[in-house]
Structure formats: structure tokens, C-alpha cells
Image (cartoon, rainbow, N blue to C red; front, side, top):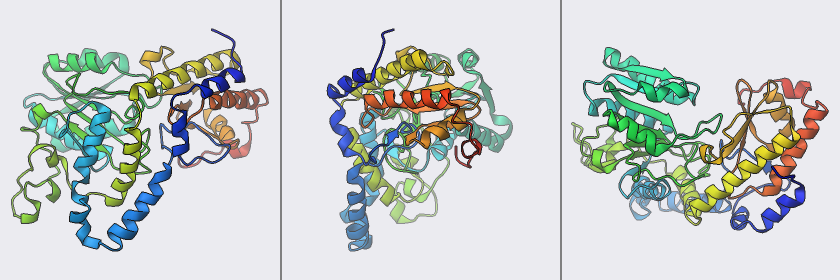
Length: 411
């Protein structure tokens, strides 16, 4: 471990091949934003494009825009753009609904695709919605399926010939620990189970190769590293080898083979289009389109390399200067996503004290301080300044103030 100083980080910024991307985002002067793993920063071009869609496409062209501006085709077009970021050939990814809704759709379809199997396997302590949706599906289906939720080190041993689906988040939302997608997928499929990946905490932060690892199903959100905006639409992936038998349960009219024939009986559309349910979110799709086009300008391997380097340096700084914290993330760069988590019993108050200094990280109960590394707009020197502030906050116990200790509704 080498001794680090601020000049080290300034030099890294001068030689950063991705530094030019920072000017594409709306960031206040003096702000250090380490929460892009929860909500990405607004791209500067988004406001003008969404304004054009509102004022011209909606305001002037009105309903004609479904055809002349191809509003109805956007879920497929945007899905194919995300496909380039997750290693999926065209026609396998669709932008629609929310991550939660998409998990339910795919899990229900997986049960039908694996008749006679009852186990839905997932991880405890992970982002709660994945487990909640499986629990909801199991309650709906009764004795047909059971949710098997286990600690991380026990999950893989539970996969057997009664397993219909394994659902795991590629990068853990609290710790940043990352599954080996290829080996886990292979293990699940050897038992005849379907493998679904939640990519919410990895898409946009690293190369993903769904087709290469022969993944079956995947979902993900677009408002974190993809910078699509708060509540931006999620996406769904179904491997092309499964599309013929794929039947999702939310049979809304846009997923119909001929939606504008308005037939009384449902007939699913061919291919990934069947994953649609309701009307596309036009304004949200417009914001997402800008951010995806921006992401496609950069080499994802370069993004991943910078992310790993930032994580490594941040951990070194914490180990050298901050004895108050336990590193809550893997220290092996290859096993860690684009974040570093620290643990401390007063984690919430410490994060609030940082935010008061215009350094934004976030907190996850019970004791997890999360720092996300978004290589397109985060500078190396921001890491040094963040740790500098942490040293001051901890040395002087300035976190121990009423305004920092009082928890807000959203942490």
C-alpha cells in the first residue's frame, strides 16, 4: 500500500480518458456526488430534448406523434440500445414498466416454463423488492411454488432439480459484492432451472454479456448508472431461445399481437413485444433516450477500469486515514461493483454530516454507508476530498448533532 496525497489524485484526473464526459452532466459547483448508484445525475441535453417532446411532439403534433415520432416503437428502440450495454442481440430487450413489475412478469413466466418444479431461489439481505415479488407470486399461486430465500453463502447449494427459477442481483445493493454471472448461470442451468439476473446495480457501470453467458432472463432499472431520471422505465430481457414459449401474465393491450384490432381475446405478440403491458411512458422514454445515447459514446471497459481503480483508491484511503470504519465491500476489485460500503453504528448521522458539506453519499440500514463511483462524472480528487471530510467529521464527532441524528423518511 503506497502513501497517497491530493496531488496523486489531481494527476489522475489530468490523465483520465473519461474526464471529458463530466461536462455533459448538470452538476452544481462544489458538489461531490457519490450517490449515482441510487439516482444518476441529469445529463445536460435531457431538458432540451424532453422540452421538445413536450412542446412540439405533444403540444403541436398531438396524437399524430404516435406515428410521425414513433412513440409506440420507443420501448423496442430503447431496448435495443440497452441491449448493446448488456451484451444482448437485437430483439431481446424491451423498455417498459418498473423493475418490480418486470420481476413479477418474468418469474411468473418462468414457473410456467418449468412445470413440475416448485422452488424459487433467491438471496436474503438483498434489495427487498426481489424477494417481495417472489413472495407475492408464491402467495398468488398457493402450493404450486415455494420461495427459498437463503444467505449468500448457501444459495448455490440449494439449487436442485426441483428449482424452477434462481433470481439474484448481479451486484449487491448494500455491499457491492458481485456474483460471477457466467459460473452461477451455468450452475443453475445444469439443474434445469432458469436464471434471472437483476442488473439494477451493474448496468451502465461495467460491461455485461448476457448472451455470452447464456442468461435466460434479466431485469434492471435505468435511473442509477444509466442516468434516465427518477422513476425512469425499467427494462426486461428474455433470451431469444425462450421467446417462443415465453408467456407473461400481465396481458395488457400493448402486448397483444394486434392491439389496434381490439379483439376480445388476448393473443400475445411475437417476440419480446409480448413483455409490454400498458401504454409507453413517452416523456420518461424521451429522457431515457438522451442518457442511453450518451452512454453509448463510451467504452464500457474503460468505465469499468476507472470504477475499479476508484474503488481501490478509496479503500486504501479509508484504511490509511479512517480507523473508525469497517470496509463492508469486497476488497478484491474483480469481486466488487461500482461502489464501496463502510459500516458504522452511526452511519446515518455520518452521511447526513457529509451531505451538509455538499458531499452526497447514502445510508442503508442498519449501519451501511454507501459511496457510488460513477466514472462519467466523478473525479479522482473527489475521493480525496470525501475522505478528508470524513476524517474531520469523525475526529471532531461533528456527526453527533440533533439535525444529523433525526432520520428522515427516505434514507
